[in-house]
Image 1 (cartoon, rainbow, N blue to C red):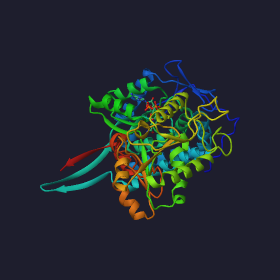
Image 2: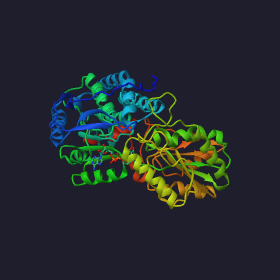
Image 3: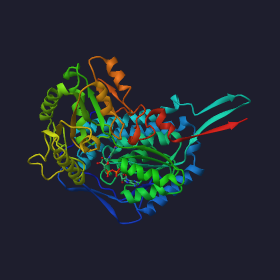
Image 4: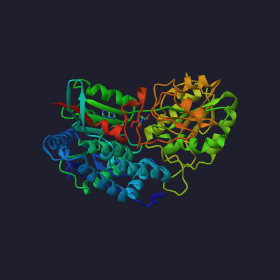
Length: 486
Ligand code: NAD
């Protein structure tokens, strides 16, 4: 399915009910989230803001459905039919979800296309997991035999950020449901509308009562949800800072937790690779979705002798990017998702200049776009590992070029941050590139390419997260293992 630019006249739908236990119900309060479009600062929709009472209701419904309902007791193949149905309902809604995503978060058509295509793939992946995964098997050991049974972990709380809500939600909801968990899902307040459409897709698939709730809310309500004693598992995507708090919040009850957190991924360019092999993936990997992608390649490691060549070629490619209203045909870079994100990115640009990095291109708010949350695609060169812009996740269209003297130093620099989510190595031959890739401490890495592959294990080393999502590894995160001895 091809996603085109959203028509400028497209109006976001508002919602006045919450999706609790599979039904649209009155919220417990009159509080609403005003969705502010980063394109022009206009309030474009409202959705109810879930409060603690709504969390209590949703968790109680999920608990009841898990403890007494049919969902965890169905066979994986039976559940898979519902997941395939959700996938079909999602695909029907992709054009509208994509238009909503553009209006509420500012993503241009190509980004929306990639993210929603990922959502489609993930439901496809989740609905076929039972064909690839052994839920039960006989085991024998010295002196005994028995049956190994993998069971759903229980009530799962799923919390996601705003940078690709339907895709991120699908990556968690699909495996959680395939495992037999019941789910309370809290999207971020910045991008709730496309996710409410996902709730409608789930409703249309006719899951049993209590299995899924969707509660848009801020971090306090998120914290209340993760602390809830009836929640068995928390699956979170977002900042490393929030991930740390969530891990601490579940610690006293030894709660199960999966975390998909920040990144500062490195692209290593060797001395022998032609730049035409590098640029096509490097540009999109760095600044697509205005750099608001956890796996973005934001550190470009180059041989010192090639720094000017690479920097100039990258700058030339950036000059060809079209920054502007993401609803317009041909726009490649839209705004950041919110004012606070724009301010945060501009602050990092200020820090980079203060630290002595060389600003090659960008660095400001594009002319004529002052009403929205735009930042020019920005390149810093002569960046050293001790600089904050080399270490911290900026989450904006800002990449840093870091010169190195030999490949050992490049590997050391690549491994020198607290993160380890993605990466890429570009070399004249794939074998050399792969040898280098094996030495980078990161969850996914491209060899003369880059992708964020979510239908295979995706997740981070070090402070980029805990556990893996996608495919059978992602399913495993929602299962407990029981040995029945005979
Ligand atoms: P955040 O991590 O604070 O919020 C993400 C989600 O978690 C939201 O739904 C939020 O309501 C919820 N949340 C936050 N604190 C929580 C808590 N203590 N308990 C339960 N839920 C909680 O991210 P943000 O404030 O939107 O963005 C800040 C920075 O985080 C960004 O600039 C970026 O660096 C990073 N970020 C990373 C990713 C990623 O995919 N790795 C995504 C979004 C943001």
